[in-house]
Length: 451
Length: 132
Image (tube, rainbow over all chains, first blue to last red; front, side, top):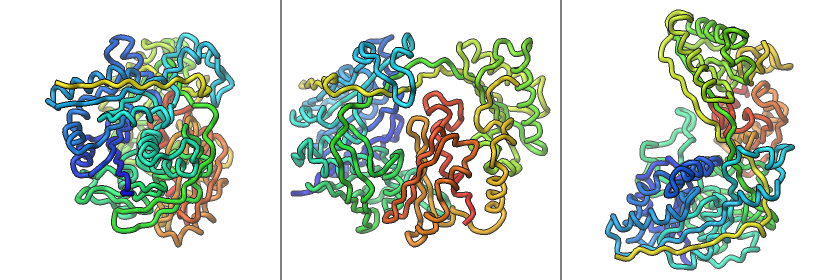
């Protein structure tokens, strides 16, 4: 059996489009996966949908589809993506519109839904993970609750001969595991092969992070041509072993280092990687460099999948107000520290703080201690520093007042301050809870465009 | 002052216990000799309020040095004031890698943290400063 060729077209919502197009054109792929949903993306998308029923899917959906669909349809590449976010059905319709615009002769789109578990969460007051509280503690602030669907939710779509599969929340690696299950006929309890499939999904889901992106440290770890880094693809065999590679002529590197860095990325215990389809065991994974930019990945296994699915809950959590101002040249650090001290004195003063007193905050110097605090390298003298004050606020007005406090350092603070910026953002925070599989009902609808 | 100081704010410069010893250790690495950066690369990631940190030997032959140098205790001490919880270590000798999970490390988690680097992405580089 020839290997199944699966590529990664995006590792996050804003990722580059040109490497995905390259894969669609030259990759000889069976499937191209776009993973575009971060933890709180659905909550933000749900807010957009609330103000416009046709919105709530990834704003870059049309641009990506316009770029890759002609090549994908021509080459028989199935597009799989979670860009449906909070509104997969509207996203499916939008893809049909793109097909019409492009003058495609036919396009079939599968829309997978069922991840929305907000009603169940409210009705059952589930306990929150990593917290002593329950869902009810978020009462009035809760925006969304979406279960991480597994590969099983995508199988009907894969059996329906479609060009594009659009989902909302699906466990990231399941977007890759599903087409492997469908193609090779892996059983839903073949934990060993599913563990290997999970490895493929995990290695590919962050796109260039396995092919040389996020790796370079000049003089120590050099990576060629990052301006045109190639996105990865895997050639997967029926037993689940895979070769990870990238297209000839692209930048980046695929080797033991790039693969190991991605293998462990955001995994806690490598022997128990909890995912919707399988509890993966990556502890015995081995990488063999077969040729330049070709790495064999094998040795993953797995155990029975968790009884419950994880869900992410998005909720409103106040505002963060932030202000920044720079100081440079001799004494930059001392002037920056004076600026921080002035800000602290004002925030701490009952009459001067304008309601900002007592709020949780961070006051720091970018260039000195903003990343790692006072103990790691903060003794090195910088040429320039940037004062940063960020405060957690209950209201937008408070957050705006904070920015004005920093701006006032122009005329009222130390000498030579410049480049003030201020920002206010509403915090949409994420919490997690478990939901029984029996309470999650995945569904697949097929949409079709024909002229 | 009445406000709670976030980790890393200048006010805490003299606070956490054991901090000065770590400080000295770091300075030795800065001024002289080789550091972890000469033999390894690192990548960090986020999981709720926990940070993951992988350190991978550039040459697999250097793995024993990583395993000896990077105990969970050493890493926890290095990140004192940044990581407020415990540190767990996983060793993967066949991959030349040691892997850490650092608890209470991300200011409440990416989505609500006040930190500029809410994901803790830059934590990876800090560990490379350790002297060999």
